[in-house]
Amino acid sequence: MDITNQIKLMSYDRLIDELHALHEMYLDFSNHTDNIMASSCFHIVAKDLETLLNKYDDNKKSLCNKQEAQ
Image 1 (cartoon, rainbow, N blue to C red):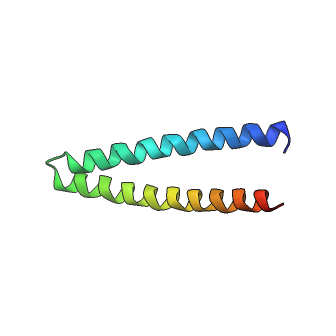
Image 2 (cartoon, rainbow, N blue to C red; image 1 turned 180 degrees about the horizontal axis):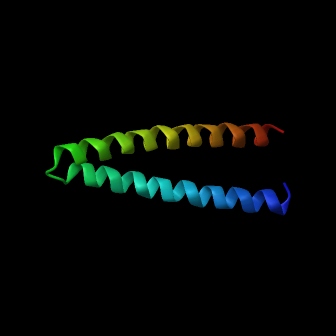
């Protein structure tokens, strides 16, 4: 893998780390607000982020397994 791809992957991993933090923040907001509408919206966004992050983690694992097999 060349340096350009490594830099892109590092930047992408940083973005994913930020999305994990955002997911936790949204879950925290949804669990600690008295406003039912806001709670519901934050919970929906948190679940969508969770689905996205799980797909990324699964794809990353399968990619790593493919690279190890080569």
